[in-house]
Length: 210
Image 1 (tube, rainbow, N blue to C red):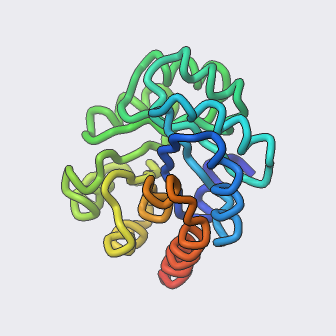
Image 2: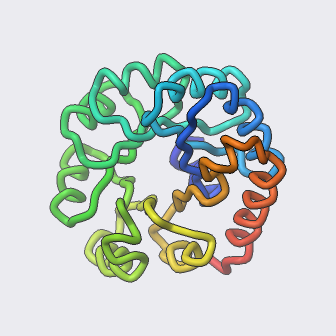
């Protein structure tokens, strides 16, 4: 099963900003305990690469690297054990590198032009970002109309309350969110709360009749 098919199975993607690599393993354990063996660690902090390395070594996770801004970061993330790459925008050099090296990637898009740039490069699963700021699920539903063969992972400002609107869109394979892995929870070591919020989100996904 491909990485994207595995994401589609779970339909939910925790987007993580981690300040301390010591948080990586208890966080991974908390997500798995909540029924969600999926994580995207964003390369926004000095601890991110080491966190990916530790979580990858643990195993049992579909592990992505986010905020990949250039090819060097892409190489670093893959060397650390990431399974796929996520970018905030459509960087042609990063997309071309991933395609050439058979690395799964969901490049960020917010317009039809960017979607077509991705399609030209053979990429048909994209990240709709920043989702809530550019019209939310209503905007994404409209964008989906002419692109029936494109799959989307909306991310950016999505909450437990707005989750259902995205999940109701057939072409959405997974929704990225950070409410279950908020930085204050990680920095205070509230792993039981991470598990509780994750389990609640998983139950929300299961309740969707799709």
